[in-house]
Image (cartoon, rainbow, N blue to C red; front, side):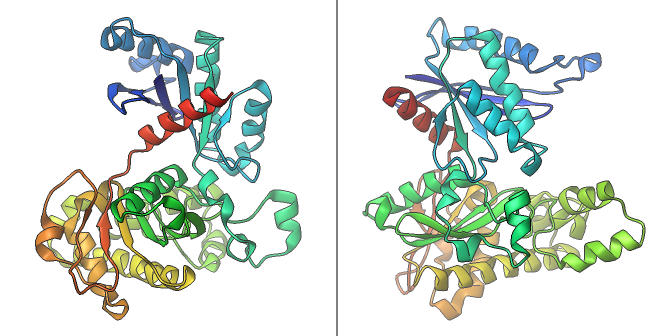
Length: 375
């Protein structure tokens, strides 16, 4: 089955075409500056899709697309698995807009653009939050008045779920066990970063919460912060927009060093960069230790995503903080480049440390094909 995978943002549309049977990537691309026609961008997502269609005609050479899979960031409490998109599903996703105002509206625009261009095309929504719907209540509850949960849905949701589900399966395969028997800690480390505790193949805790802002130090996001700081800054004249920009776009590695490029920070070796890496690795190590306890003892620690897969220096910094858990890294294995799942720990390590490349587009394509076949 030929699947078009769409990741639709407010001003961009990223796509891939996958053969779900072979896993082959047949085409990929990025349409930018949506809504900025004055500078050469498409006027809207429908026009952006027209450009995608033109590119696909050249790439696919007449091979038809069988279905479209969409990355949808927030599925709230309703969606615990991928679903075939209907008008009612679109309205349900739109009702979740207040929980993901920067993402869900753009996701819906992509869905509507496909429906307008190809009205009979099966479409499937794959939710970033779905993998974390198995969190127990003691993990997803915030210690705030219950009315805030009942009225506004304020609770921990978690994100990067599509990646975590994919990596869980492939980490389990590397260890020679079925996914439902895998127990471990997974760290998805990119510009956005989160860590998840997996027990018997199910997410039982995760570092991102109501929004993707909670948890680890990220490229431009602060991660965990004392809420009173926001109250203090509000009294000092910071507006809601100021605080949003500060925490989501000007903090994290960027706030500490002036930029958010991990490779540049590692290569600079200056005191500021070193401190930033110490802060980020310390925060992650604390979560790993806590989640090791949460799952009752990890079978593996898994690194994935851009930084997790490619930065041997950052992996080394993190694992060197885990000696109390009896975890040790093999320097030679850690520093080897490689695009396939592999173990990078020593034989003496209490449990293996793995690097497992993620592939969210492949996961979305697989999920889309499964939903369409079963419909």
